[in-house]
Image (cartoon, rainbow over all chains, first blue to last red; front, side, top):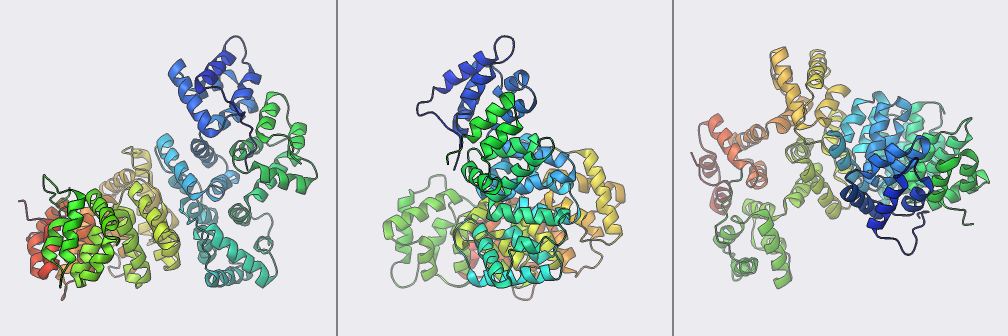
Length: 316
Length: 316
């Protein structure tokens, strides 16, 4: 469930565009006005506002925002304003250029979006970067990380609810055998995780837990600092319980000495319209404090206002 | 270029459906009438006829054809009547269930269709088989064949004309190094073949030929009977000059003692509306006989009539 609040009666896109243009006029932008408009419009509405703005003022709204704003606030507004598929393409491209520790970002996108959403990310990637997401991910990775990451990003998973229980038992056994042998990068293990539908994989992992006594991610913690195992555990979490993955990313982003704004902004802007409600519940349960309070403590100024507008107040 | 001939003035889909229904009435079908309609309608027209037939007569046209026809003729008519994406999904699914020697069929489909066409095959696969093409291909293969085939089938390749010449030189060198080392299944070699756009790969291979003196496929002939190398060479051919691949499939299908109807029917029905003209030219050049004459010598009856209607007479 989404957490953004769209008012029951929304001004026309033309009015919104005009108000935004006013917010940019004069010396210094009117950040409050920008937030009051953009943070309270859904993806379809923001898209029309952006088109309307370009038609009326001859400039891409994103460019205008880029000129007027700065720092973490700017990044949060820009990411939020982007069309979801474009945003994911942008984030993935940015990640492939960073150090290997960001190599899990395309994993997060591939495993938490629907198959059709992922396909639209790939189309947006073609259009913007004149190459494919797959080739960039493959080019910038190597070894086991590549072996797992490239198929995760490539597969067009089936999304129906059908589950083959015989297969689930059979593949749970394969997973257990390979983990027992510490063959974590085995072809069969990677095949199962990267190609099965989420419903089928979930059935397999439930059976794994029942039959072999542990959740698979517990058995995959042999070496907690091994990068490949971290990626594998995160992928399994993203595929089967994404809210837990995002809770953890937020927790780590705010538990540090110095907030990790890159991660915080990403999770808030990409999930506010999808499953932020579930993430908030998970966060409160795990940390004993509500997510909006945690964010309020860790951030300040317009950036704080923007994130809180997207996350919304605690409902409980 | 296509070889099928659609008459300048086509009857309405309702009339075509009615004529087909007449062709099925009575004892024994009127095969000539069936060919005269279906073999001379394009994919969009056949789709409407099929819908119209179902609406009027309460039965899927494919089912009616299945009941009335038999043997190679039936298979050619059924494959031809299917929507191209459905047809490719059907052929791929059939291949995954066969022996490993058919493992190259999903390769042919992945490498000779456009990225968007391949995506539509994947959607059709989901709809029909309630699972993904990727998971079936991965499940039914192993080892090096799987290592090459799964990414070939999975990637959504970029299709623009842009070529990075620095990258082409760099990757031609990688390919040459790996081939010199006989590391044919090396991650980097597979990455380049499975993720680069066709334009980029073509530039890389032209540079390879110029710089190292041989076409890459010549250097990949170390062991002509090695299944992996065969698949790799075919994939490269499909990606860079599909008409040569199809010419070879047709040549082998008709050079044998006993025609390989499975291959012959597949190539004719899947290419008649795409690039059969180029394949015919390639065939004539390579074999000194026109494709339609070769087909006429190898086949008979309604099957022969159907194939010749799709391939058309020699233009030269």
